Image 1 (cartoon, rainbow, N blue to C red):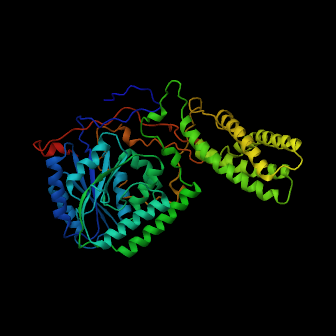
Image 2 (image 1 turned 90 degrees about the horizontal axis):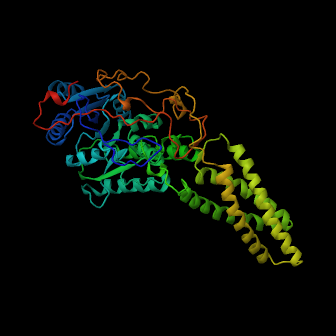
Image 3 (image 1 turned 120 degrees about the horizontal axis):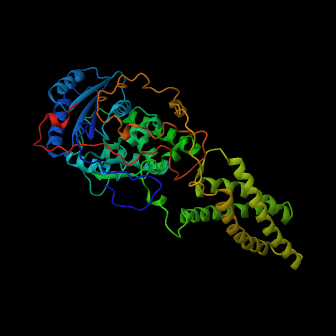
Length: 504
């Protein structure tokens, strides 16, 4: 039950409550390829741990991606023996492909995956998924690189892992500590929105998922884990590293060009205290002031450099006008994106036109200051000109912020009409041309007989997305966001009847 009654523009996400539903709360996916030796002991160990410690209904899904040994037969026997185990088989390799297929078909509100070798101690599983069950976080990852982690592995893998995370931090500004640990979980409603944006089908899949989630402002919970290296791992380190670097380049380019509709993911899943109305506190003012100040300092330096360059071959008035014009265009574009959070091309021309009006006011202030200086002395020193221009620009900056906030980029979140419904954005818009799972054998959910067919998790709030046509401001509520209703879920203790845990 929600205990915070503060008003907000979005409904609060609820802790998954106990109820009478047969749907599992947690679906743990184990992607495998040619693991006939390790699969059975791994699944039995995981099943025993969940049955003994996990207080909700669960499912273990073996995702076999094109194994050529007896792995499919082992998975089938496990499915026949254990009611909580099911298996899917794909005809193509790729861990990311397997996770996408199973997660897309699953009806569990919390989805997780772990490597078949169970290198991560299973005691970290409940702390991993608890923030997702409580609706506190959107994704959760196990980390081997925090100070509280306890890791046993060789120096080669330690170096590769830390080097890879340094690359992510330097190139993609990632802030999570461990991208490669095969121990992650995600809420299903979040997965439904993020999965269509993830292109990779191999080992880079979960890294790409994390980067996009972090850039969208979603909350990622990290759990320090105990981890013991598997000496028999079949991962091809060189090929995996090469593919990861290609993925880093591709995602970095997509983020730089703005081809990803991440703005629509900023606050789609529940209440955010930054959206609440608080008396006498203008919404977003502090963040806008900081952003405007940073952009202002950089654009002022840019303006002074331009003025000094133009001044070498023209008069002060012409140099000032040219420098102010160029810097004003750059300033408007930067403030539009960084300060006021407006993305996309719609309205950009209008914003630049309004920015030029603001530029004209600044030109009057700075040109008037120069005219007054020239009237006071016939040949002012260059340093004196710069000092006068700095003072005039400070005055113009204050006026520019007020005009930007009130006129160029006004806050219309409360007044804007709801966007008309439109067909769902095609999967091929980024970066595919066709959804690789359009013929997904798992498109028919075996759990479609769930009596809670109106589960809010099954309705993607972005089915009416208009990424390419609707101007969107960071923090806006997306249409169709999930209400307060949540799926009824049944806690199951170890002493409960075996079949009651997962009536399928």
